[in-house]
Image (cartoon, rainbow, N blue to C red; front, side):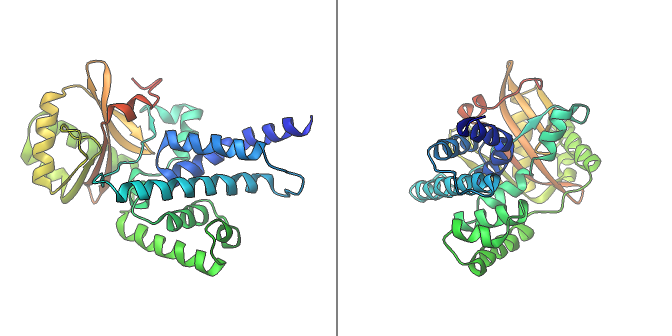
Length: 292
């Protein structure tokens, strides 16, 4: 095996890990794929003679690519009114536990609730937290990526950790999540606002990346979200329960096509957040093979 073949073989062996890193950094499946591809272009053009830890080197390059993408995205968002962003969900069928590939996918996923909080961090905070807290990279290795000292990188991760812990509710048992989501669906389909109030947290937050007027939307409060859910269900009768990032979610359909993906955050037997992707362009990029 020559040098190029060896490099390609090693890269393909690490591709899944690099995609996982990029997804947590970016919250976007297509952007994660783009970051991994850009990593390969940089790897293929580099001198690898002095690389001792090739997997760590791949991760470092991917992290730097993602950091640049995050900084560019942040600059674009600061220039626009598009302040509501819902991360891409990882959708799997309900019988995922029976399929080894789907089991691996779910085990590798992180909650949409966590990804939403990560969106509020600075690019450097997000990178430090993801690499250290989610992938156990030492701060000595994180520091050069963000152009900081190890002590400064530790502070970045600490600030991010505080934000995450304060804004991300502890996940309940899977059975509780399913029961609450199914109760929500039943009440919404039946137009039962009173029943909805029993499963919606009073301060629930609903985020939709693509409301009917094509503008991102955020609703706060059980009354607004409940009434909106009843109206939406009346116009979109068909739905399907699925696994979303290891938890539960719902696909809505327009005819035979998926029109929206809703993920639910459940705490204390109530829905505390709903994150909805309904932008047709984003949905078109997602893979529903074996699900619908």
